[in-house]
Length: 507
Ligand code: BG6
Image (tube, rainbow, N blue to C red; front, side):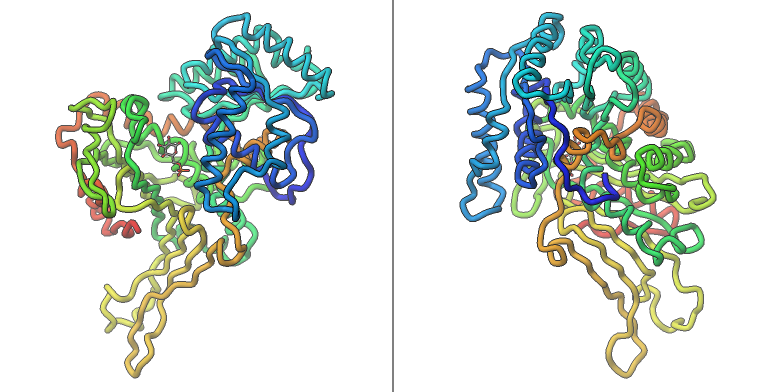
């Protein structure tokens, strides 16, 4: 990222995608490259090598990818023609070549080495290579190992940069995350590794830093003296769709909490870094996970959706979804209460919740300030006299809202909670970027600020580890416990009610 305006294209390089025929490549990576082409931020010379195990010619690969891109652009509602613009697509199309290879075999890496040398010779890429692991996570260790053993990421042997993007999920628990880190760090240096959490690419998430640190207004009140509590919601209205098999072994906690939700916690809670240098920012974020008070099962509520209606659509229960066990105990919802044991946040609870098939898609960070201390308005019913809220809306309707009390017109001194709104699309006349192009650009330019460091990932897993262990020993008996289209299980309300608080409505 991020403190300076982005103007210059990255240096020439080769981009190697492992998992070239996979969902991620066509749904996110290639569209991100297309968006970089639109903003003139593709490398001036580059090769795009797709590696996968299927038999496919370069023409076939290019054709398939183009088809998907056409579909996405067509559905995006952007542009009058809603067609792929050939001027933007042709630098990508020209750079593409397919390499058939099994990720677990040495020959693949020997072939890749040869292909990279040819591309470098033809296009003068300075030896720069970005490797992208867009495969199932079981291949991450073997790809890292084979890249290492074949000398492809060895900075002593290679000229130019050698970087590796590692997708989510990064491990399954603390132990597996540690072992993946150990494997990566055996072959690569930390600054060669880019662990992606796509939430960090979202402009509205980065905007939290701008809000906090580019304004004199908020930081002085950003602490336990003024803030009552924080609510972080990542609600989804979609179900598991075609990902039943993956989700069965994952669940909402692993899928969303130590990564996406904790990134939002870190952005909200971190101390100001001394600069926007990657290491300064990452060090401040890492401190937060170290300061989280150990969780117990009493701090967490899990849920699983039943059949119900989301908007006008009747939808099935989780247990009736494709490739999901009819008696599945996988959670599709999790709410938790955490506290951060440091000077700024002691005694301020952070309530987190995320779930599928909830009432609406809504991701927000809501900061609730303490009530006015003086009882001037003691005759005003407390229900009406709400405390002030600052709400960072991450998606949809990206923006920031400040809620405060104002006098209702009329003779009586009646109060009402009103809102001041900043909306990205009204102000900047464009939707904020969704993330992947920012992250890929940052990898191409070597900026690690928006990527997770090994210690960060491990401490995040460390925070949820007691819950994973506790749940493993106790199957939930009451599943399913919330209807699709609702706001989640009733028990999640109790988590806040115990503290005399309640969740904001999901809308
Ligand atoms: C992914 C999870 O990492 O994030 C999905 O695996 C989830 O289950 C998705 O739906 C949410 O991302 P976004 O950008 O759509 O909010």
